[in-house]
Image (tube, rainbow, N blue to C red; front, side, top):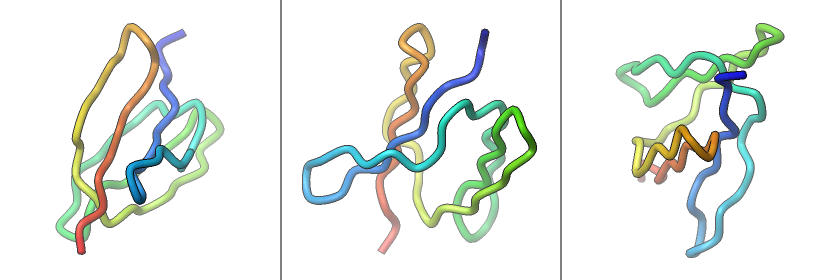
Length: 63
């Protein structure tokens, strides 16, 4: 499987945003995430790190 879990950094902690993410789509407002079931979530953040072998994407908030 190729999907990843997406986390956002908050106060030096990683908080789970969405599991089994299949698509990461840049938007003007942030990043649109879509999981394998079609659930979508727009996050005001930018990509900090992608560790695809470990199925993890780390985001940092845009303030």
